[in-house]
Length: 218
Image (cartoon, rainbow, N blue to C red; front, side):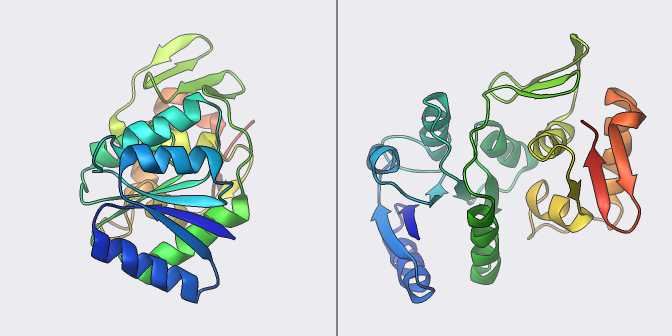
């Protein structure tokens, strides 16, 4: 499989290239936002590892432009920014996953493999599940055409669930993707935010699958 690493820190980019090549991937590296965008558009890659802070064009803008062009290359975003709004921004603009620096290479590899297993199905700009709609670019959620006000974390949680409608998503997966794996979080934080979401979108829309996780009803 072919990977594109877009990272301007030359030592980190070289380390990622060596490590991923050792795992059997073919890896190309770009050091600027414009170079990464051009390579992603035309390189036929299976996935991209994308830094946020890049010369010429930010990682956010790179992935935003790709999604606007309906290019669904799976994107794992890397950033030294670890705030919840930063992570929500990354997911909202179209990234599939977000990992903060410094990161565990083992975790990065596991998340990358998960992205590759899912592949790159076409995704609409505005997500819709039943009477729920979510517009990542405008940060807008509606239920039966009525606007729903969500916090950044609630929005990121619903965004992730709406990309997996009808599927059971475990608490561990939600912690890893909506919260960062490196963050210290209370064990019941997922349950707390699921409760917040239920009050806003309807309890019947978000099911608990005992011993397995949660499922957004279609």
